Image 1: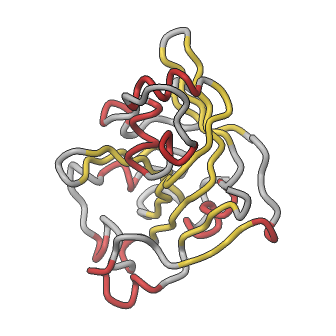
Image 2: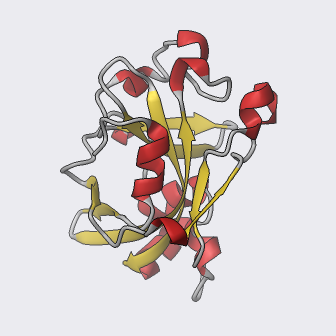
Amino acid sequence: FYRRTSELVARDLLGRYLVRELGAERLVLRLVETEAYLGAGDAASHARGGHRSARNESMYLAGGHAYVYFVYGMHWCLNVVCAERGVPHAVLLRAGQAVEGGERMAALRGLAGAPRPRQLAGGPARLCQALGVDRALDGADLRRGALRLTAGEPLEPAAIGVSTRVGVDYAGAAACWPLRFFALDS
């Protein structure tokens, strides 16, 4: 599943469940928005031009691992590594809807009452905060363990919207590539 291009994996992740176990608690999000990054030839990728560093080293793992990085000096972002070892494709997990553990997610986000779904995990930083994801999970195997992806409820192609990626204006022509995928019902 993960050892394909990020564009294919990004579409197929929609509707799947992202499960996080925090001690005895189980938190589950249904993925509703993703973005594909195509490695060395993608000016918006952390691996553009073949760049390799301590920060992005997990992008070079075999598909099925987590790539977690810090952005803007304040937020964590979670990506699913795709393709074969040494090919730095990744999918940014942009948003999810709570399936299980919504109250705990709200507490992790510092939200009182019953937050709207978008407030809970609408955006990559919110998604990470709601699940307690940080750099300690960088390189984690997403097929098993305390952070994993499960079958969930995959979407049919007709239920998926496509647009350009968000926040990559610096990437020139690559900013216009249609690599953002989202559940039309979300």
